[in-house]
Structure formats: structure tokens, C-alpha cells
Length: 406
Image (tube, rainbow, N blue to C red; front, side):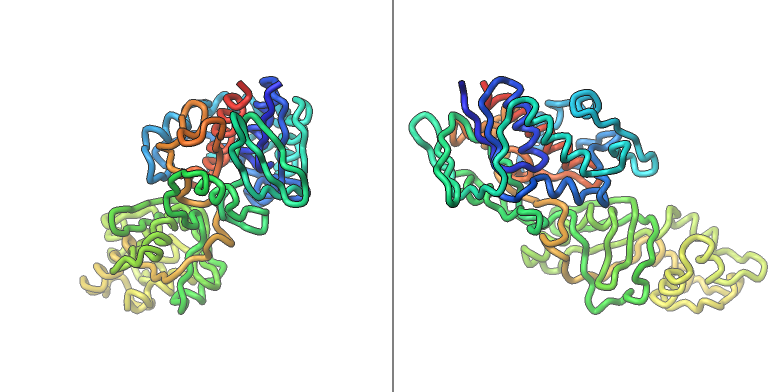
């Protein structure tokens, strides 16, 4: 019987073990923590956003071939993934219509983690927790997986699914990247992606806790990103889905010492120039602050007027043209100061990783090392907030597990 060793009992690794064992291989799943799947447990605020309700594959980010990425994403259609969770794992899914996300009906991330591990065991996989893999070495036609304080495990195929560098407290510390690089793979520079942004000194520090929906645009040298969604002022900067989704442009701008650094701009409401010009026209005794408070939180309205150097108590009928233009610019294309980010400690995923050019998109087998399969966060691709990164993990894990068992 063909033996497959899977390294990492996270989202991609557990899925790989399910499909390798289901295809008849003797499957051993190795996990460095005592329980596995810790990123699943903390995802979605403990509810686990399993998948997007609708998929826009153009929102994935990679420095590799976009065509290769799309082949991988399309290898397991969204509808089939939904059916797998509901029928095979036994987890009904519900859509959160406002965010277009799918969650387990129980809204408990633990049900997802436990359900996947239980299915892997049911299909015949052996799970070994508290097992630290130190190296993966070619051994004739197969592989030798070396573990700290234990005998090496011989295997016909190895699947590396031990994540990237994000949220190290979950046990994700880059072992897969180190092993694959040592084996000769090209690693695109890694960086913290989907991470909160820091602005110190905090120009908007007084707004900590204020939240609303905005549209953000980050523009750097040769790259840009835009996102509409939740935005939160924190005591050190900004967070929320819209911030996380554009943060990679800022992170890379700083890492690459761009001069000038990437610019972060914000449209504070759904209104554009024409709509705000209309709302700032004279309207009885209404003041400027009154016009803004009708569209956004009070504290934010006051801060934006201060930023635009416009008196809050001025009547709209007395608002000079130059102040109106300045205020509209602040409301529609306001500049958000920033100087850093919260890095891997708070990052949802790792950007960069193993070049997709060195992976067969049908099987996830390495083109450099036959018999070695790569899946999940170790690869050079990530998606936005909203279940995209789980979709990537499920798709690549399934492909790797199925092919490794052959």
C-alpha cells in the first residue's frame, strides 16, 4: 500500500489527509501542536467563515502566473465544496447575506475543525499530534520525514501543508517554506497579508472604536488594491475587512523601501463628488456638521471637518466654494496617514511563497521534486477576507491528497 505523509493538520493538511486516505493510501497526518487546526478555531471571530457565498477569482493576489492560480481555484468548484461540507463532513452552511460569507449553521469554528479531523480518521488516516517535523529528505524513490525526538518516517509521497508565517501562536512558523526552499524551490518574498495598519502618531487616535463602511484604495509603485467594507479605528491605527484587504500594498511598500511610500485614501461614505456637492448646498439653517452627521458617526464628522479646516458650525448657506471643494476632497478621497503594520502577529495569511510555476496545478505535485506535494499557505497566493483563503486551502489540499495517493 502506498504511504503518504501529510505535514500539518490545518485546513489544507486535514483536507489532504481526507482525500489521500479516501483514495486508499496509508495516510499519516503529522501536527506539531497537541490539537491541530488552530487557525480554523480563531477564524471568523470563532465562527469560521468556511467559504465565500460567491466567488470572484480576480481578487486573489499572486506574483506567480494568474492563469495557473485560476486553474487551481477552478479545480474544485465552489458548489461542490459546499456540497462536500454539508454531505461528507455533515456541517450545514448558512449565508450571512450582508457579507456574502458562508458559516457553519452552528456558528462554531470548533465544529469545522473537529468535523474535518473526524472525517480524516473515519477514512483511515492516522493522526500524530505533538510531532515536530525537522526535515524532509529524498530517500531513493521515496522520502524520509525526520521528526524531533522520534524515528524518521519513510513515505512514498509527502504533502507539505504546514502553513506560512502568519499568527505564529497557532504553530505556524514557516517550516514548510524552509523545507521547500532547501529542496530547491523558488520562494517569492514573503510578507504579512491581511493585517491591521498602524498610524503613529495617531492623527485619528481619538476615534478609537468608531466603525463604519468605507471604500479604501492603496496605491504603491506598480501595485494597487481597493476594497469596500468594514473599517475600524483602533488605538494604534486602522483595522476591519477593508483595511486588511488592501494592507498588502502598504506592507510591501514599506518592506521594499518605496519612496514615496504607498498612499492610502478613503471614501468615507457611498457618496461621490456630485452627491456630496449636492448635500452641501444651502438647506434652511443646516450647518456643515449637521450635513456630515446625517451620513456618518458624530465623532468622525467632527474629525474630518477639523482635517479639512472647515468650521463645523458654519451654515451651509455661508460655506465658501474653496472650503466646500476642500471638504468634498476629504470626504471622497481623504488621505489616511500610516507608517507601519501589525505584521505576522495579526496577519490572517502569508503573502508570497513557493512559485506556482514549480507546481503542477492539476495535482499540486512539485515540478522540482517528484513525489512532493505542496498545498495551502506555503504557496504564492492569497485571497481577500471572506472565506477565500479557506477555499484555497480546501482546493489545494484535495488536489494534493488525491494525487499523492495514486
